[in-house]
Amino acid sequence: MDGAATAPETIKEAEQLTRVPLVLRRRNFSWLTERISGVAEQPAPRWWWVAFAITSSIATFGLFCIGYLISTGVGTWGNQVPVGWAWDITNFVFWIGIGHAGTLISAILFLLRQKWRTSINRSAEAMTLFAVICAAIFPGIHVGRFWMAWYLAPMPNNWAIWQNFRSPLMWDVFAVSTYFTVSVLFWYTGLVPDLATLRDRATTKIRKFLFGIFALGWRGSNRNWRHYEMAYLLLAGLSTPLVLSVHSVVSFDFATSVIPTWHTTIFPPYFVAGAIFGGFAMVLTLLLPARAIFKLHDVITPQHIDKMAKIILLTGSFVAYAYSMEFFVAWYSGNSYEKFAFWNRIFGPYWWYWWLGMLFCNCLSPQLFWFKWCRRNVFVVFFVCMCVNAGMWFERFIIIAGGLIRDFLPSSWRVFHPTWVDIWTYIGTIGIFTSLFLLFIRFLPMIAMSEVKTAVPEADPHYGHPPGIQSISPGGKERTR
Image (cartoon, rainbow, N blue to C red):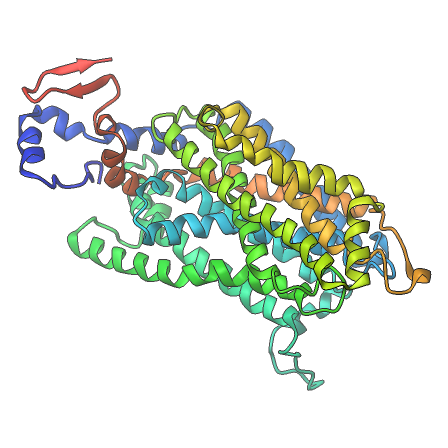
């Protein structure tokens, strides 16, 4: 599998390939295997232990807060009448949105034959799984009696209580569980060839045994590749509608209500665009430090960062358009409640959430990507991605809590203030997410080696050669860097 490069497509390419020294043809792409596999095979560096100790400690305290909530009650949160949903559902929608970029990169870009995705799809898929795990925590614990959460599943019980399948909350259960299941299958299917590579390179019996089990007997034969490509294509086709449906279903939690700023038909496409927007920002937030630490500049190239920045600019423009349409519809409808709700969004108790989070972070900061030098500057890209990560959380909070703090009756008006349990439960999920990602890059290949080997030559012909050799002339002479 080390030589899994694409076959020459033209006679000229084949003639040039035959002129390349045999030793170089044998070494073709072996450096990529060494580079990516070495990350998972070598002992963990000191920085990894420090980072994992910090993130796992935060995750542990977050789990303590969840246990404290379950044992004490949701009164430990700042929720009250009329704000029944606050940080809990905000965090749920936020993490579900983060998980959209992985499936988009893996499924839709795969079907569109965008081979530049191969350098980032593995990490994005893993990020999807970890984000959905964090999201799944909140629907279970926000119901109050956590031990009764299993009634969300359509299971027969002795009380003969059946779920209300007309409720979008039930749709969430099916949508999220289906999305997670298909995402796991998609991620694992793409991982099988690389697990076989780690199995063949294993130096200990334990690693060889474990990787041998999970590699499912992969031998790299033509039959293996044929079934693999068919399964991957079918899962990509199955995953594509999930990208559009899952966050649309999540938006129905609000769009089917009668609360001002919630009951609007723009929510499904608005939420999907926002999910892709925030998901791509999180992918870059994770990959840019990993690219610098593991010296992956020749695998995750400026071209990849540039294209992802363009997608962030595109989806950010969709989000900005949705913001403007919300205000236009509120004004054009003539509904006094809608007008007041949106006026309160700008100048009410959470005014700075809107001005800083939704306007600056989500609408203005991505406009830097109109300029090529901003898209190619990793510091500018990282800054914009951090702004988007914060802005998307503020957006979800403004939509959920901002729509509830002003009820139809002024006597019911309340302003939500989070407690320490609210804050640390959310921070704990960030610790869970980063801890799982650190474990992923420590034990599994963070780059899809088998896919990159087939795609890299189309991006840059120099990547097919070992490090230190810039190119090979038609006469077979090497030109070193």
